[in-house]
Length: 114
Length: 116
Image (cartoon, rainbow over all chains, first blue to last red; front, side, top):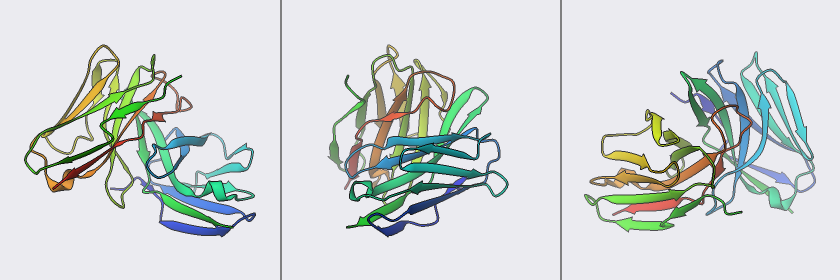
């Protein structure tokens, strides 16, 4: 049962344009949502997060939007740069009986075309 | 300061052998997590430690998998009688405290396990 889904395994975007990565979830108890970026042979690194009580969080070129009614969030990167080429994981955080857990999606490979 | 480190970076083993994977979290981080990423899959949660105790072992795929953490620091993930489906990248992450989703997890580079 995949609670966090990234339905697009890959995405190619021209340099300078907007990249939009999507994520859907099924568990309405998630408290926070996070995006991680992963380069080959490295561990994921935290990019940006959003609380379940917000609908938008912006940090420089990165903005995350949350639509709770649709159980959908998206990451916008604008303008896209070649260094943004990586795999992006959406993750959802919950505390369940005192246990903290991050549930990850399967990732979207973003390729920025120079 | 040093980040999360994992060893070995690569491990090739024969089916049926036992393996041990090590994680050194960031100093002072009380929470430690193990994940694995199989080919073409997302990050699969395995186990979570708060200090030395493991309140959530729900992600361990079978009783061949076990993990321990001593001294609230280093953790070892052990896989007994390895199978080919155990081949994956095993990632360790740590974070500072036990509360709040804004305390981000910091990941190590992973151990790539290949079972022949």
